[in-house]
Structures are given as C-alpha cells and as structure tokens.
Length: 557
Image (cartoon, rainbow, N blue to C red):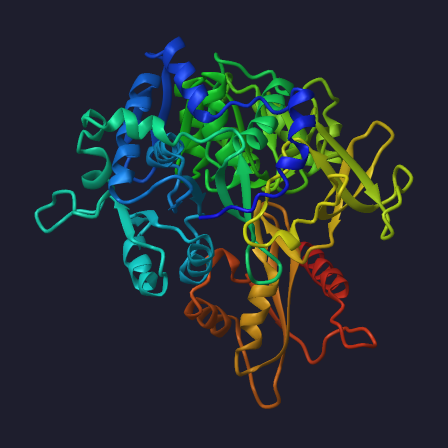
C-alpha cells in the first residue's frame, strides 16, 4: 500500500522542536518495558461469555508478539501491508498490533458490529491482505461472513479465524492458532532479521481506522506513532496516570478510545491493563475490585450502568479513582449520582478518530465542569470557534469548531481532498461548539449529519440511501431522539408512496437484508403524510428532531 499521509511532513520540524513528537514507536516502548520490568503483569484479557482469563507479563507479551510477527510474514505480510482486525477486546487484538509493528505492517481495526456492507468497502479501499476475525462471537459466524465476500476483494489473501477448529476439534488450518501462535516462528534462523529489517519509523503510518462517514463511504484515517504518542503522553500526564495504575478497558479497542488508551497507553506507562470483551456492569465491578483498577474510560452508558449496578447491589469500587467519559454529553444528575455512589472523579472529554482526545476537564476542576463543558485543550492542542467566514466569534457564541493539534492525523487514505486542514494546520472538525472565558468548550451540535448512539456513530446518509431504495418509500430522513442511557437513538421518518405501507418490523427486516450493522438500524419508525421542508425542497431535520424530542418528553409524562 502507498500511503498519502500528506499532513505529516509539513509540521514535523515544529512538532519535534516543541517536544510534542517524541520520535518513538510502540516497538521502543515495548522493548523498554521488557528491559525495565519483564515479569510485571502487562495484560489480563477476560472473555465474559466463557469466563476465560488470559494473562501476560511484558516478557511473555513481547515474545508472543515476535512469534505472531514472523507468522504474518509467512502469510505474505510485509512493510506497509494492511492487516485488518475485526476482533472484540481479546488478547489477540493487542498482540496482533504489536506484531504488525515489529514488521512494519499497518493495522486496520474494525468494529465487530460491522457486517458485509461495511466490511466490503473498507477491505477493498484499504487493500487489506489479511483479515483476522473471531470464528464466532456472540453467536455470529464471522469466518463464514468474510469468506462470503472474499471473492469480491482482489487484495485479500487470507481469512484467519480465532478459535476455528477442524472436525477433530483441533485448530483448523486457517485458524489464528495454527498459523500464528502454535508454531514457534520466533525460533527460526531468520526470525531476528525479519523482526528488525522493516521496523517502522515514527512518521510511518501505523494505524488505518475508518470513520463512520456522512456520505455513505467511511474515510480511512491514517496515524503515525508520532501523532498517536503526541496525544497519549499529555493525556496520561493530565490524568496523573503512571506505572502503578491498573486500567480497565471495556470500550472497544476497534474505536480510537480503546486503541489509544487501552492498548498503547498501558505499554507507554509500563502499567497493567484489563480487557473486558462484553460490557456487563456486574462483571466490570468484579474486575475493578479483583484487579484493583484505578482508571477506566468509556461512553456515558457505561457510566450509567456502572453507577446503577453499584447502587442496586449495595457494593463499592474503592480502587477506582477516575472515570473519563466521552462520546456524548454527561447529564448533570449522572455526575452527581456517580460521585456519590462510586466516589470517583468524573472527567469529561471530547475527541475524534482524527486526533484522539482533544479536550478534557482537569482532575482539580469543580464537578460541574464535567457536565457543563467538554473540557479544555490538552498540551499541544489549540481550538478556536469561528463563524461561516472563518472569523473568531465571541466567547459564549456557538460556531464551527477548528482544531490545530500535534496529534492531528496524517490524512484520509486516497482522499487528500477531504483532509479538511488548511495551510495553517487548522482542521475543521465538522462540529459546532462554544468556548467560555477560560478556554473550555462545549459541543453544541454537528454540522455533519451523524447520530451518536452510546458513543457509536451512525452514518445517517447511508441508512437513508438504503431506505430510499425500499419500494414503499418516497421520502426518508433518519434523525436522533433523546435517550437517557444512550444519549440519543435513531428514528426513521418516512413518507410512503401512494398505496404503499411500511411498518417497523418490515423496515428492520429490509435493512437486515441489506447487511448493515444492527446498531445502524433505526429503533423507531415514524410514517408521516409529508415532511417539513425548505422552499427548495430540502428536508428540515431540525423540525423533525424537535418533534421527536417533544414526543419523547410527552411519553415520560
């Protein structure tokens, strides 16, 4: 793969001089951890459905990463080749990224909720050579799904399935185990040459992660070690996290949240991380107490569940000191309840795949900062709010949010015209915000047409385009409605063609047939005789949102 990360080189000199780009990679950090604390517990991975627990010290993790790295080269993976990974928070996720970094391959993490439609686009666009999936997870057969679309993917050579077995119950020929972890590849005569020959530099692309786009086609975000580390290091410093702090990561590592702060940050800190693959608050509490977890980060529904479960079970989580909440605004009542029930500091944050965390509140901020702001910029980050002409607006006034950051991505793969970054380095986030006199921001809306359901972006335009193809639909709009737990959920508003009908079950069945992720399917259907629209015929979604918000409020009364 030829990467066009054109946003890196122009800002390298300044970023290095200012001390934000450290010119270190995950290889440097893993090697340093092995040298300093080889026998320290690095990773505990918990599979909730089976109860399986797997642990690695730093020395064990590095050794197995080397083994997997050499194994990947046996599958034809080389420098700058894409390895796609559609796994939940299993240890194989972490080890595969570390292995890719040993040989200069680039990891493309993909959410396990994705189905044929999303995968087909991403795998083709990213030219993935290998994809690693669970054989099954939560009752779904991933191997069969990917094999079904493999003939349409000219670059995809191998589908590797974690846990696949043959008729005798032994690891199948295409299993992760048979190909990558059982053979002692690291002991081969040429292993050390393989492991050092193509190690990436700090400005090489190390991660390709797709956004949930508004055009129906996700964009491939390219990051280097320098851009990722430039975010994680000041983030950990602001939160005062160190080697003695155990981290719980139940937020998916296929999201930037889990990838940066559940995979890379623990290695940089030489700390310990606990991975939970399926979020269950009861299990989360058990892990926090058993592993003495100090820090976790997730979206608002996780905090709601944890708080309510601790309260209802009359238990406690005394080791937990910080819960960083991002992905949706945190309700005032939730912060107050969580502080009282959990006894933790609630930190509010905002960020994007393109930057990682951009703003956070501080540990010494008053609690109300967590529910009335999304924080202030991390070191190395500048933010400003401008009007449609690009002029700064007064504090307290909403406008377009621009970010100039040392952690800004390298660009969108094969789409540099969409990079959204001007000559001065300002990136248009597509979000609307206001800034107060102390430099704290509050996200007030989105100029991008996307719904955030429990921290998961729903690509609205793609869903609408599918609805328009339904034979009964004349007009369609997908809009959010408020929800206490998820922040917002999606409602499809449609006008049917004369003589045609559509009910909720019919809509769900139709969208399932289109092979999109279940989480993208609207959770309500509203059939209208007409749509509110402008004189030019554009649907006025703000009126639909207001109508749904009012309906939701009335339903509570």
